[in-house]
Amino acid sequence: MKGIDVSVFNGEINWCDVRDAGIEFVICRTGYGKSVLDETFARNVTDAHSHGLICGAYHYSYALTPQDAITEALFCKRIIEEAGVLLELPVFLDMEDDDGYKSRHGFSFTRRNVTNICRAFIDSIQPLDCGVYASYSWLTDYIDWQELGAPIWNAQWSLQDDFKGFMWQFTDRFVIGNKFFDGNILYR
Image (cartoon, rainbow, N blue to C red):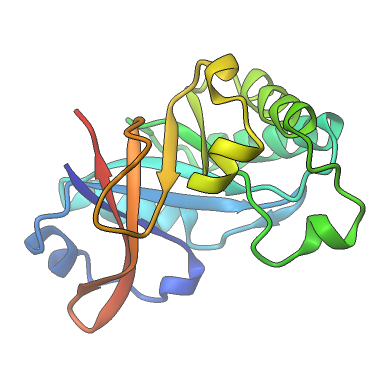
């Protein structure tokens, strides 16, 4: 199945164009960290559903410790509950350091610490189904994904998926209409 992931950065989305491009699912950002809501979350899920798409969610993590991850998971769960939306796909913890926050704040880039953070988030967001999103290098270098036993969403912008988990983000340049989206494949 082909899909996209979306956030406030995508602006106004033409959901008819998305559906007509053969997209069948959308992963919508809930927010990030312990307190920042993505103001487009509820609208994106509702609009995607009204165009026949199934939805999941992701939450960008700034957690430095497992305790931070618990706080983030409870915040993420509250966003979903307050939005009153159904998610047919998992909620994914977005575990990376794109803006260097973790590096600047003394993050321990050990496999044990990163895996413990993922585990704390996954356990705390229950009963929602939860997985982990990360780049291929994070999945191979920092996360003991086998220990987690959770759906894995691999971000590897290339012609092939070397991980083949639950889902693959293969590009950040998927064109729909006149907009770029992150393109994904859901293995079903």
